Amino acid sequence: MAVSLRESVQRVSDPQNLDASVEEVFQMMLSIECKREAGVAVEDKETVTSVVGFGGLLSGACVFRSGAKTAMKIAAQMTGMEFDSVDNTVKDGIGEICNMLAGAWKGKVPELAANCGLSVPAVITGRDYHLHVQAPEFQLHHGYRFDEETFEVTIVCDGLQ
Image 1 (cartoon, rainbow, N blue to C red):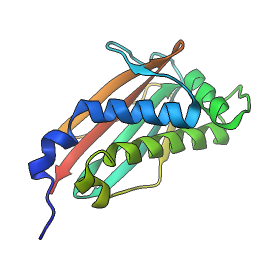
Image 2 (image 1 turned 120 degrees about the vertical axis):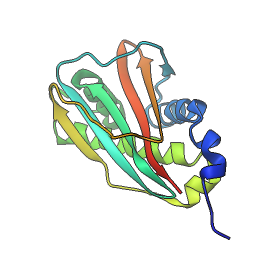
Image 3 (image 1 turned 180 degrees about the horizontal axis):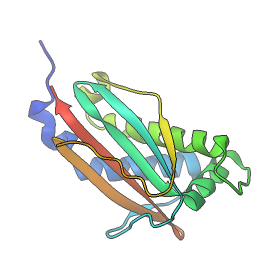
Image 4 (image 1 turned 180 degrees about the vertical axis):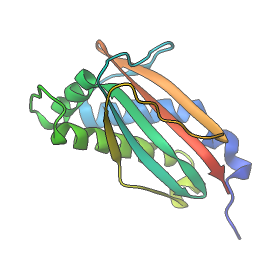
């Protein structure tokens, strides 16, 4: 019997799955309590974005975006090191956070967990760039806060089988 996500689209696109995934990853991996907060936007000039692609029954991506200061704080919590710039260790850490978020999110729906793979994380740093996805089937975009730091997580689905 062929597996389809069409009947599960409400579960797949449930915003609570993203919130639970973010809370789990940040609590378990970083011992950081964070919560979704309306109106949170990353406003730093220098930003760090990681993208992990989904392939299989769902095609799309998980996108993590933060300011450089937040990325360095997350990497410091992961490694026990201090950072004064966004070096390769910080980029690798943010890539791994995005990878864990993507895995946790897809794990919330059994059909998706078993029939959807993840790409290697890509990390983009810089100023004034925008990630554009053409006509997604659905998109979840949430802002989160811990301490004084903010970040955004987006799940984009451009195709369901």
